[in-house]
Amino acid sequence: MIELFLLAYSLPPIAEVRFTPDYFSAYPQQISIGKDAPVLYSRQPGYYAVHSQEPKASVATPTLLLNEGKIAVFTGEPKSAITDTISPVYRLQGGSLAVPTGLIFIRFAENVDVESQKAAINQAGYEITEKLAYAPHAAWLRAKSGKMSDAFQEIRQLEAIPNVENVEPQMLMERRQR
Image (cartoon, rainbow, N blue to C red; front, side, top):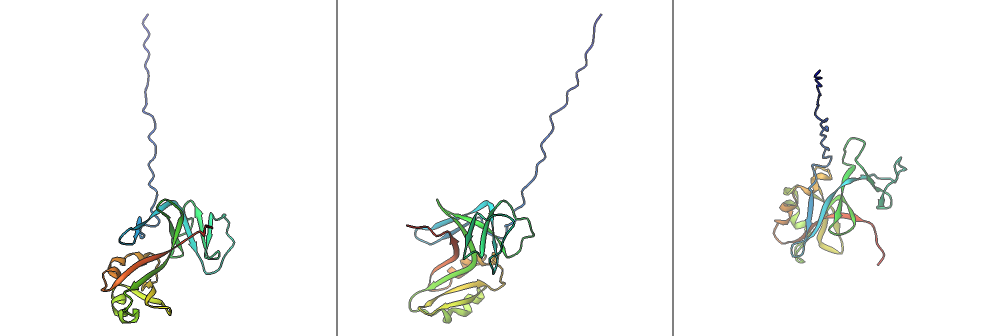
């Protein structure tokens, strides 16, 4: 008697592919600061920063507090809708975590007053937020839209203004003892 065995084979289940959303697509993956020996900041996945006017108690424990507790860095992904009070976290090449503030520092040649360049700064999409009394050729800028992510969009236009010597976003990092 011949017995016939039918073996049924099924393919192993295919893993469901889920794409992780890029919550911070409006921000650059990398930020290069400086011309001669540039410093590189790379967006750090798995971290986000919450910016607020007043330090607040949070349900989650922050990994890092900056600016007297007004900026809290957390691990994971943001759980609330992305607003301009939540930003990505970057890592300085070979080192510390860094959080953008939305401010851009600009410095012109010593003999060029920032106020004389106000029209060019505005045309590039920025406005002067703070003039430096001790350095009339330098100032802090903010994107005219007020959005932190927009601060990075036209940095190259600022660098193209005649007599600009330095343009860089403000990046806050943990203070280290030397």
